[in-house]
Image 1 (cartoon, rainbow, N blue to C red):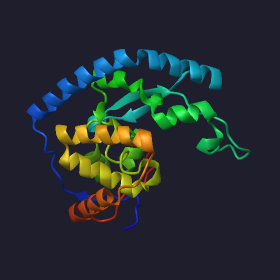
Image 2: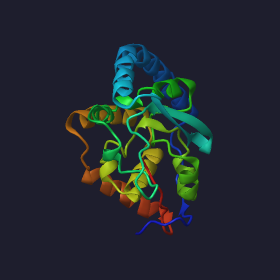
Image 3: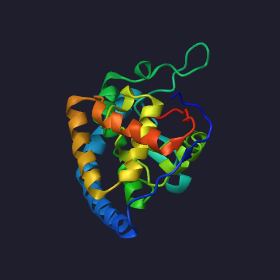
Length: 229
């Protein structure tokens, strides 16, 4: 099954009830607020490292698609420069980051400002990663279904391989999460996120196989292609 930009017929329903959603928001706001306070010193240190390593600006901001494909602005600490090659294209990631900012990215400290987006309701702590609206729209029906839930700071794809996965594998994992979303799954993803930070990214073949089989069972037609980071 090779990805392309054509729309696919895909039928899943969002399992969480409105009561479950409200509970998730209460938990996220409480946890997010606590983490913002606890992480203030860490964010200050991160800002200093970015300033010393890359200079200003300290933050990278970009419009991304939220729940229902509503556009919001995501912010993270800047870990790369905008250096381009002779052809005008951006250089590879590893050539645009300093050693210190590479560590920040590895530990996901650059994502900490997104806790504020969690408090405002633009993001969740757990969910598919936020992508540019044009990218999500290019997924057709799959992009619309992926946006049934709010984007998250971490997600099922991020703890099952992340940068080691293809776009098709990431969207399969994202849609599996949408169809199986629950508070307990979110707790599991948070624990796996800590494991990933400590031990690095690894592809979970069992989870990936389940997600790909889920995508095949529920879709009729080819899948989309897009840049998923």
